[in-house]
Image 1 (tube, helix red, strand yellow):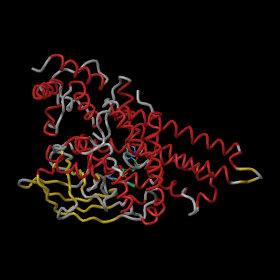
Image 2 (cartoon, helix red, strand yellow):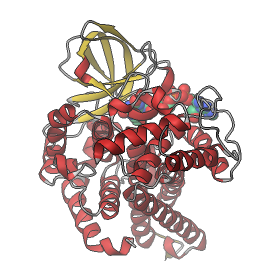
Image 3 (tube, rainbow over the protein chains, first blue to last red):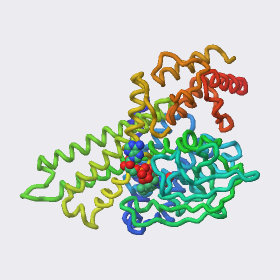
Image 4 (cartoon, rainbow over the protein chains, first blue to last red):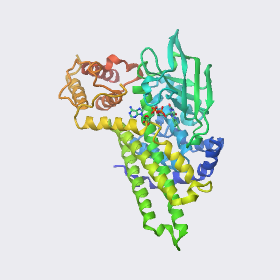
Length: 390
Length: 83
Ligand SMILES: Cc1cc2nc3c(=O)[nH]c(=O)nc-3n(C[C@H](O)[C@H](O)[C@H](O)COP(=O)(O)OP(=O)(O)OC[C@H]3O[C@@H](n4cnc5c(N)ncnc54)[C@H](O)[C@@H]3O)c2cc1C
């Protein structure tokens, strides 16, 4: 059995790396709404972009898949604690790469994965559109067969790292239903429009993608027409939920650490506020909730590593639970910081804004409530009922 | 006709997943409305793990997943190729 305690040294190493290379930039990333090249270079040098990818294509996942899955999660925990925006960048890179690992042809894997694992190219995933969010199967962008390839028209929005990614796993509609493609950034007809001024996760470098008569050869088709959401995008979303759940744990831990420091040093009524039981109640709630979420993430990692069919459910539950948890924890942390929590001299207001994003991405809480309930019915041996998105 | 044990194993998995006692080998699961997007990947994961085969992009054809018998036939084809 792989236990979290077995990774103490690696966790410490990851924490030190994130604290040294990422955390000092976190406020600037938030303010300038971009991740500076030096941070990306540090991530690349540390091999962060290889995490979660198979060894065969330059990744880190090899002989011990359970330990690898947990290790990959711990990386996202460390990133999430230092900067939710940087965790987002590494997350969507893995979300974009995972469908290629799972469904790419030999040629597609050979062509793209070595670049992704080395970090010489960055990936992202483009599903959401102005009129289509949760109901991914209903995307309006259209791919039409044209000779040996496809012509694609449509608009994608809220695409994390849309401003910077080198390639996108793109989901469109087609005569056969939802269909996925590998879309290189330099494709003629693709224009990228930055989105700024977000509530939180401001370093996500979001963009709208306008696809105006983009031509892609058939070799860029990922999976088969009709399977773009159910199989291809879902490989990315499954990875994303797992990564994000760990990212939430990291962000929540940063809130707790800051709160403990603050409560010990801030004095009111001639005592550190840490001595007040009502503050202790908040600290206790935060620590307990973080611990529970971390254990769920660890368990989801073990199931992923074992390729257990229940791993998807475990990942969905971990993301659902951790994203709700971090919202509560950030709220209490801000409360403990009082006015200082609302001001620019402490990271709490950033954490609070970043935390609020987590229940919206990689499946909203409401969508996951439907997903998880269906698993519960399935396990209870009852008819799962009609699926909304079918 | 595919290996009888593969048919039984896949049939049992689908029946459990759909909360039914049994799924007839030739019942079209898309037509009967039992399948959903979660089940799609679960079925692929189950087949790969249980039978040690690899489902590739070229196998993503609705007809390969339409009935218990078709899934068992896919498994058999993949197992022969892997051997
Ligand atoms: C910071 C950020 C980064 C993002 N990055 C990406 C990215 O990289 N790639 C990408 O493709 N997308 C991305 N998105 C988009 C994100 O995936 C969507 O916002 C999300 O899927 C929800 O879609 P929506 O916002 O259109 O909300 P909608 O689907 O319109 O939902 C609105 C509300 O209705 C609820 N709702 C919808 N359907 C149901 C239902 N059946 N039952 C109950 N309630 C329901 C939702 O839970 C929500 O509360 C990003 C979004 C944000 C904010």
